[in-house]
View 1 (tube, one colour):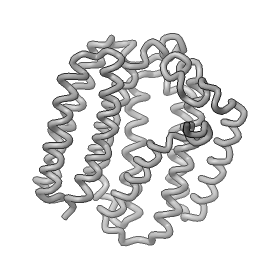
View 2 (cartoon, rainbow, N blue to C red):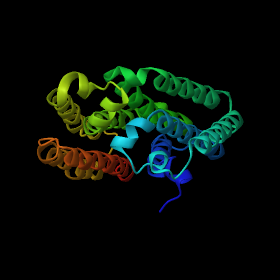
View 3 (cartoon, one colour):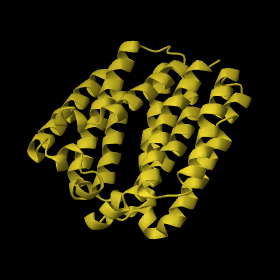
View 4 (cartoon, rainbow, N blue to C red):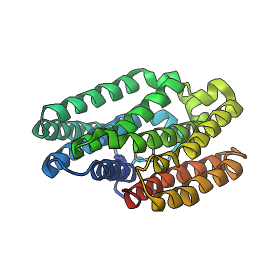
Length: 276
């Protein structure tokens, strides 16, 4: 079993963030300093890892019901240890951010302030919280493209990431309704009901399907991108919408969440392999 200190920083999610930074850096031409890119990216990863711990600390009551195998409810790491680890990660992020330059350090401060705002209150607002998290995640792609020399090349993957992550946030909230209710957290599915949340999620994921070919027709990506997107993203999303979201019990919602995480990887691979 993976050590609790490692599991609590969610290495799989950090790998997606690192890949998103690398993808947008390459799409932008990778014309700027690789050392600056490396330092800036590592500072972002340390910051995100620290906030994963803060999130688990604040959600520990909810996780006892919804995610009992996570490190804190499972007892694989204590609360004091988790706090110390988060402090070390934040210090590391600040040091590397400062070494990266004024602009990357400022971006780091903005993300830190945004995530703190989310944890300290916005998390309880339902849909606005989902939007803010999705915007924060997608902005990483703009940052990576800026580090590469052309922030505009980060716009298509950022839109794709925003929509896909927004949909996944709602799917997770639907799956976690019992735990959220016991933990006193308000989410959109609790406000709109499972049918309302399912309808909005379907609309968002349909927007992913409609948006995904547009970069090809704008001549940003080639035929490889279009084929991979149509077959491995759009078609798979349709299947997920019909078979998983069409019957939104907890097991199917968990499957849909994993499918959407996989689609993030496939979408990035399509953009990397199909870039012009």
